[in-house]
Image 1 (cartoon, rainbow, N blue to C red):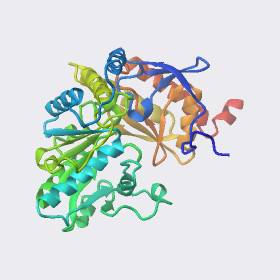
Image 2: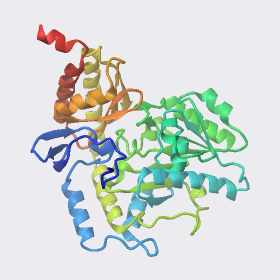
Image 3: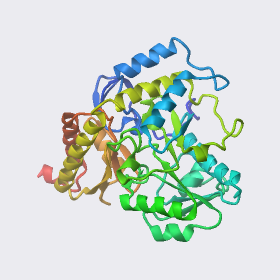
Length: 401
């Protein structure tokens, strides 16, 4: 018999009662160091005092009014995001990354149609991508596992190998509208795009009159050590999606765009009942208060580099389990050998009191809250070291001797 809560997730047998910073406690009082952060979402940690107080205060005033009326909290958040994001002129708010990506693709198509080229509706995407779970976004993702059983994919998405500029150029046709890419493929194995490749994508978009659409749902809001990961490449997109860390755990998505792209989304062309409501945007403003505070992103970068060095050392100590380290900022991954699986490694980490997230290509993903200290990074490395010992092939037999 099916349970009341639809069983469409493979949930671990863990339930948490409270959290503080980078730590979570379960019902039995066991403490876990959270280096998954709700899949890179609790950006400023659990129960951050400023975020908690802001949400409580706003909830006591007004939570939701819909977009039939002005929402001052959304106006303020949009203005702050535009000020902090050089390319962006305007922001559309939604509830999730998938919705932010849907809005991004619709804005791209509307831009070309309004400029006399309705035939330009196709978007070039990349193998290994993940853009969300709606019908259009699983089509943009292109993974057969996600598409199976849901009928024909939504038309308009072409897929090429990640990092292959020759393939990108060959895929461009008179129907191509945009190129959409994650600066780091999170679900696809924590694979960073080469900075030169990102620059070349910007150049090819300019050459062919295409729009560059960046999916920064997982990489944005400080996770790379800059507000947006594309800043490391010194480029600017035409339109960009954000979610996850933008609300610190409260559901919020955003699509940031140049005026020339967004001006064609007139009233009635796109919308959301909950998107950008007072409570969500109050949370977003509180998160931005923390992330834009002087020195915060510099600290993220320093701790990320410290963690990177530690993970490199970890890989060197466990060559039978870990074959490499990849990622950027505080979105890192341990590439595991064929002798173990990422779910096995994830379980071993849980047994040691560390929460991580499995990713594609047999990678164990590490995406902690941005507020972690070097001491907490060192503790995570210690727990990962113990977890690797648990799953090292032949380790149990050697220990028995």
